[in-house]
Each structure stands twice: as C-alpha cells, then as structure tokens.
Image (cartoon, rainbow, N blue to C red):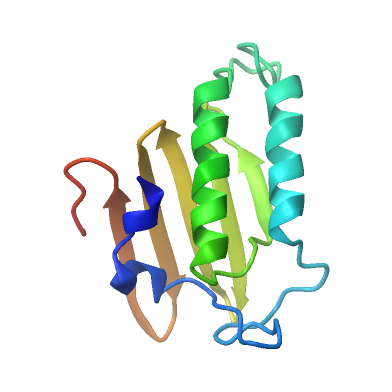
Length: 140
C-alpha cells in the first residue's frame, strides 16, 4: 500500500542524491540510516507494547502498526527518501518519522494506523503542507 504514495508528497521529503548526500534540505548531524529507523521500531515492539509505557497513560504501540511503519520505511527508502532524523513512538500508539531540514524546516510522517499516516511539512519559504495517506486520502 505504501508504494503508491503520490509523487507530489514524496517531493516534499528530503531526497538522497546518487552519492548519498541529501539533495534538498541539510543532512542533520548524526543522521541515521533506514536500518537505524527499523532498529528503533524493533525497540518500540519490545518497550512500548503495553499501555502506560511512559507512566502517563500512553497507548501501546501495536505490532501491526510497527509492521506498517516498517513497510512504509522500506517504501520511502526505495523512493530515495533519506532516513529520518528521529523515529519516535507517540502517546496515542502512533509512530513518527521526523526530519530536521535545516533553517527551521521540518517534515514528519506519523503512522496512525495499519493503513493510514499523515504527512506534515513546515518551512518558512512555503505554505505548510498536510496530507493524509491511506484509503480515501486527501490533501489538506
């Protein structure tokens, strides 16, 4: 399902050039590779599998959602998107990939369900972008 992401949305995410450098945006210090993002997901599977994993009522991150986030990572890597700066669990049971694009610009994909995700891009040089991926997806 993730292999059919709209090319216009993919164009908003940081891309790698043929030599591995980021083609748009600045590569953040200590940038991880996609294998690092997958290792983070596997850690989430172990450490965040039960409700209240943060001691403040956070919802468990389901194995099904982690599998979907891993499939999304593989699809993004195939499309030449550079690995995220951070891979994070959300208190609502979601998983986010976040990129620091430099100059205060950021991009984030939050996997909110096994077949759904939201993309948000914030930059000072263009209007904010928000897209929903998955069945019945729309741009906002």
